[in-house]
Length: 189
Ligand code: 4DW
Ligand code: GAR
View 1: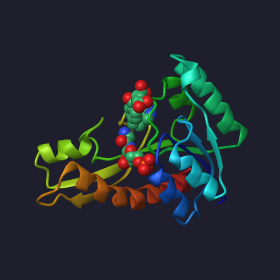
View 2 (view 1 turned 180 degrees about the vertical axis):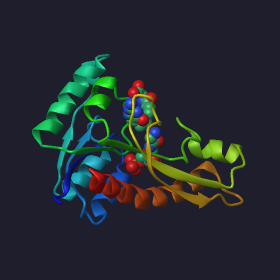
View 3 (view 1 turned 120 degrees about the vertical axis):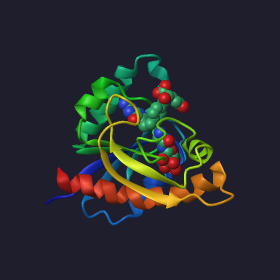
């Protein structure tokens, strides 16, 4: 089987993008990185890896989310992208884009979904006195942080943990989980 052609969508630092780039890319190959935030650090990581990196600023589109997504979709189709991976991508995608990429659009979320969709997941896990925390890779559907779970990884919450220490430790867990789940999805298609 040939490697699935992957585009990664980012908005910021791109540490999960880096993990996807650094992993053994035997089931997938990252061929494009797009950021909706010009100047996002993740774009430089992509260029350093020799991957095409584009900024598609959402701001000129104003409230017309679909117009932004039509242009994004064109970039992806033009490059024969087969899987789209969100990695810290912060724009809610409309039904237009989600339907166009159904089953081939994934995201990583810093909680053990269905626990703690949305923001402040680390603080909420502490607040609930959970004994473990984790991350989830899931298919993206119209409802945010929902959709079929591809994989999860968990870690213990330790005495003295703060939202910051949890976020820091969880990031390493994410960096192992995301490449494994992307490879799993790529092999299943
Ligand atoms: C996510 C969910 C909501 C916002 C940002 C990120 C998590 C992953 C995700 C990104 N786009 C998605 C998902 C998802 O799970 N499902 C769909 N699309 N359909 C969020 O509320 N973002 C707001 C902007 C924030 C900012 O620019 O800083 C927004 O208005 O889009
Ligand atoms: C990651 O922790 C990811 O799980 C989270 O944003 C961070 C992006 O970091 N995603 C969400 O909260 C999605 N709702 P990165 O840019 O260094 O990969």
